[in-house]
Length: 320
Image (cartoon, rainbow, N blue to C red; front, side, top):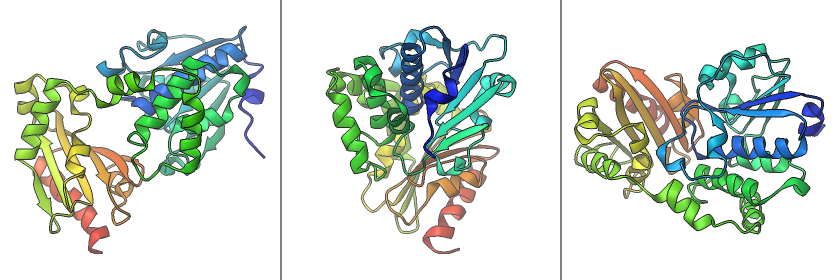
């Protein structure tokens, strides 16, 4: 039986929405689009969105000021919806999820195939959560704002339709969304392509310190806490670096590691071929994601972390 989102929320007086910690373009776009759609479809209901503070590049997107990032205490929601992740990765919104009368999980990550809500609508074949949200909407309520947010969601999770998760359906949806007349070029320049100078400095260092394994099939770059402080960078400035490493000739898997604070490391991983499923690599460290794009964190020594990641990739590349 097809999942009918409206049937599940139409009697709710209060609806809460959230996504994963450190929300990316797909998460933010999907959640904001869903919020706006439900506000139009259910004008007498209170619909609120709770997310961690989005990165600086998202400052100019539609409805950005409608995101609540301080997670105040409140009465339980009639329905609480988790998008683009499982309920274990929603940070301070976890209390809302646990207290809600009904919970719904909408996602596309294979690592969350069964879902974690009372009701689950998880489609791993979808390129982005925004693709699923689009399919759940009654199109008579679509407008240019919702279309722009969903287009951003699709574009960000497909590398602007460059990654292998892009399907014919993804492109058909993108074409339909563009038809609503928003300035998609400016939006992508601002949220996807534009990079602060701190990113360039981190990238330069990562390229100088890059390491190759398995005859150049795996590349790893990193930025220490000291380097992050030296160039005045934050996590927002690390975006896109792993992609630059990935397009190195001969590379099938790329990793960019940065130190969040002394001894705490975050790895972003990308794969260029079916030879390496980086979701499995991430899962070995309590992370996860997609076969071609994943991440994880580690507390401890950088060299131990790198050695472990190399070992996990080696299990796939060389069957070790």
